[in-house]
Length: 317
Image (cartoon, rainbow, N blue to C red; front, side, top):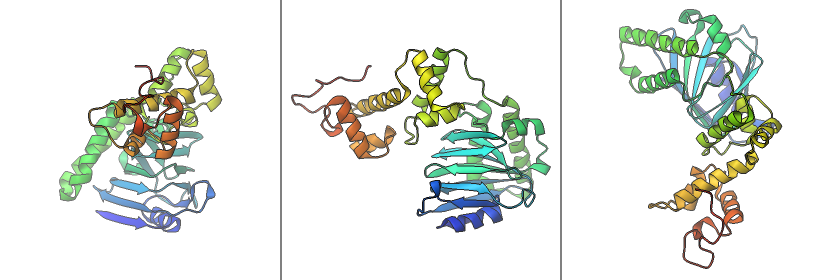
């Protein structure tokens, strides 16, 4: 096992250059900010490593010559937060449960939009014997959390993270081969660009399902939905309108508030702060303001006996 921590962007750049990819790390949006990052990794053999990486919001860009490091593939499986990857002329955003593939020898930009945790599989490309066509097609593509081969691989890597230190050289090499076969199966199951449904109703339903699956992400917005589907925010709004649905921002806000009401009506009522976090609101103040505007009472007063109790419009069941 090896580990490294950083308390500044410069320290994180140095860690990336020696054990990851030569990267220039900067504050998001160029704004000075405090930073902390940690990398804990385990190598199985010369072909692959498994690392858990946590980092505060930052922007990382490939620095130096594109030939100054081995050709290495990275499959980043998000455990929390989100990452936006730009490479090979494409941009992909992955949130919790999703994954994205990138490589060291191509121009690269990584943006952690919020505090982020990911489990990263690091593979030496020359030794992995992966299908080059499948690798090229998968670069900077969001791999959905529902992908069966990804779920199998993610579960295996999570177990290896806890047990790899106890493996001898021969079992470790065999496990490395098994992981590479799983990765090859995952890449082979993808067809490159995601095929979106045709027709506004089906496409709007797909976008709405994405929103519902990621309501707890405070970074979820109309622009985030647009990035996920490779379109503009204006196009997302038009799709919703053509399908006879409410505007996407309205849909997102209403679904978050619906979830909040269900939590507040539950047998074990959480705190207002906990409800805000579990419904994807950035903070309690924003949640309380939106809740009061929608229902006429604060979340803390919801359900209490009084003249306004349940006299305001409730979310549809």
